[in-house]
Length: 84
Image (cartoon, rainbow, N blue to C red):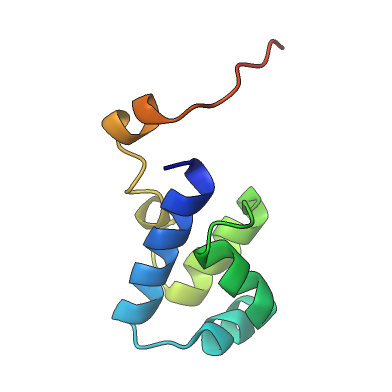
């Protein structure tokens, strides 16, 4: 599972645990409902700014959105190495 799908699954879990629709979360985060749907489906990768806005809208710490990114999960990802 790649990072977008892992993030999307966690976002959906947090949204549903708060009984929010995609539209309600989108409104609270000043995003579109389609964008929330794309995030949850793993079709989009959020920027840090979007992650912060989502954490504010969900009233959680940014780290709560990233708990699925365990050491084991990250080791399994096929992420390209970039030289800086």
